[in-house]
Length: 159
Image (cartoon, rainbow, N blue to C red):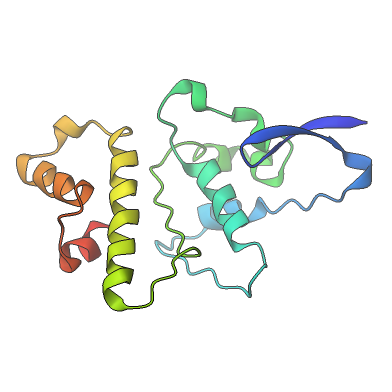
C-alpha cells in the first residue's frame, strides 16, 4: 500500500512493503540525554553522516515561521515516543556546516569557502532572531560576517 513519505525536499509515494526502514532517530535521544556540548561524528564515506546530521537539524532547528513546521515528520519514530525528547523539538537555532563539496586546493581558497559558508549561516540565522536586541558592537560584528569582511580570527570566534 503506497504511503506519502517525505524525502529530501518533496513527498513521494512509497510502497513500504518493498522497502526496509531503519529508524535512526534514537541518535536524537542520545544527544538530549548527554550533557556534552560538542559531538564529533566520524564514519567512513557513504555511511550516512550527512543524512543523520540533516535529521538532527530537522528535529532541533527552530523554524523561521509556522508554515515551515513539519510536526508529523517524526510521528511514530523512536525520538517521538519519549515526551521528554519532544520538549526539544523545533526549539534551537542550528548551525550546520558541511565541507563535502569544498574543493579548495590551497589555504586561501579554503578560508574563502569557510567565509562564504559562515556568511550564509549568519544571513539565515538573522531571520530567526530579534536582531535589535543585539548591542551595537554585536550588530557591527554580525554585519561584517554577513558581508564577508571578517578576518580569520573573527571567523573562528563567529561559530
